[in-house]
Image 1 (spheres, helix red, strand yellow):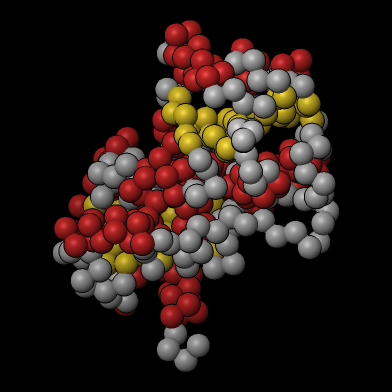
Image 2 (spheres, rainbow, N blue to C red):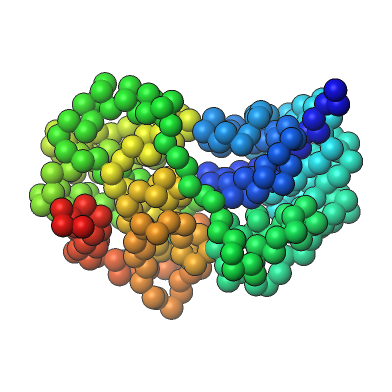
Length: 357
């Protein structure tokens, strides 16, 4: 019996991009159903693929391997070479990610010709200007068409609908149940998840005092249990919000979950409120009713890819700027008041859970 071919997907480095690349991963699985699909992912996002049944194996690369030394980088190359893949699909735009496939000796290497790396690819594609006016999910999908892996013109085919949805499974439910029962989450009302951080930088974060006021006011009207999510680095932010809100219906899980635990926990929420962040995209993938607050970034490109999402963004002259830190006064977020966020949150709840729907 002939062994199945192995495909390596060098995946993206940020959680939000990892979620938005899921439709492309699913398309690759559809196009090569008999292949062994292996993902090479940074440690920070590798846990996501526990919940992606399309993936057969995950190679976990060290965090920021290019900065931790040549040994880590070459170790990743060896892991890829050891699996003898026939195809290397490079989703990040970096030179280093394309170089990894070349050093690993993969015979066919595809990706965008960005960062001066075209000579490292056997099939490279230019980034068409049209992609700058489309959602990021199409950036990864278009690559498959542009390099000849797929006959579907994802940008122009009116029949094609990207599949980004994550579906809850019994294994997910078991993870959520363990946390919810231990913390008493959900025993006192529907669960609203909140992520007040954004790893990219403060220009993507609404003010913590406004998050706290939003939670207090909305919870005074609706019997919600609130769960704060985030990374260990965001724990001081979540602690400040928890202290300002108070009460026994607030549960602070910030810094207390791994990514493979965070995925099902967000999937078990009844509503989600956040900035433009990785957890926002997870909530969108589960199609949870959600409120997304945007400042320095563009919801056309990176908004929640879900019909159940409400985006709040104010038109100010300097946004979107895509900066990590605001050089001015965060006027894009100052324009989003607590009163408006509460009103939009209330409308979202009534729209989704009204008894006369």
